[in-house]
Length: 198
Image (cartoon, rainbow, N blue to C red):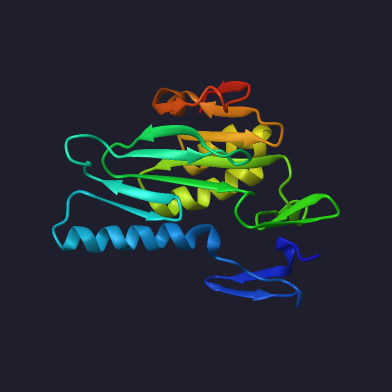
């Protein structure tokens, strides 16, 4: 099984030492693309817009005279788990195990790999973050999914993330105080909720 030790890094040059290793930039590519698209819109003089790339998005300005309202999909049930009203210049990204997966031997196998084990993350099913920079939000949502509830506070602080919502495989919701202030949770779909300090 390839590990991070199989990647040799020399400045800006990387080389794989294991023929089975693959690098997937999907953890930041969508965020980077959205940031670049927003830059282009601003150069064109557009002050109010939302760019949505499959549920991950960045909003600038407002929707008329009100903020943009964004729904967060429940990862296991039909419907919206929660909604957020965006402030100007915010990105909202979610990483989870519910879009790209298959089931093998009654086990969900998905595309987000825990670098500590080389296996798909199994303790967490979804993480949503808010951050001004879409590239950072994209990377953070994926990294915090791998970090899990035991390490989320430390990892979020290290990445400069103040707004985070995590759902464990047992349906428990872990969120920061900052996210709690912004989130409108659908009580019918929410499980146990725990608030953490960041």
